[in-house]
Image (cartoon, rainbow, N blue to C red; front, side, top):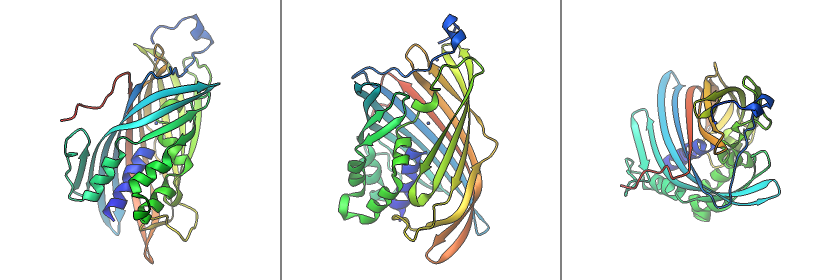
Length: 327
């Protein structure tokens, strides 16, 4: 049970889980925010996510805090027309989970994984994430069009047919929507057309997580203008969660979300910094706060659950690996 619960948590974190001064004459026509890729020229990303939850169940408050940092290595492989094919490898993972005082930790940069949990199955799950590699195809607007390597990843994590429950869980959660979102942390945070300072645009994504439910995420962007060495973009993010449609199966989960809705409250402004010289997003800092009520079915019993959650995601891009040296 613990392994499955934390597998869901880790996958959602993966899932949910995402700029040069001085205005020249061309800026008067609007600034372009292109993504520059060069064959075999690697770049690296660090994605840190802090999630704080207060869950009210039967008059009791349960608190949960998750801190995770994933380290990715990207390699542009080839360009065909206006499409690019890249590989993405998970270089490392640092994770800390605290559920009402029960702490679990993992750090791939430490020889023993820095394990603070006695569950060897959970530690094995985290270890199998390291080195996972995927092939991503992006369209002309830098939108993830296809991800290859997902089946191999699921088989490796689940242990194939030897763990049918975990295999069913991963298949149901790692939908096409979820996988594409997982590998689109920054590319779609820029506009598809040139923008002048003060320009606004919006992007909306729908993410279907099977038995977990679905999310509609809306990003409202404003191009502030040049700031020091970067171009600054502000973003307000709103999220609406809906329970899954009625289904007698749970996709490997030990519970079923019967109904309910979550939505973001008073969207906080995030900041995106675009590097015009290198033509990429240098960093992104996005906050989502949401609250709502769910009805969760365990066995034959329904339980009302109130949820208050704050999620802060920070992404950094670099020409060199951001993974700390192994201790």
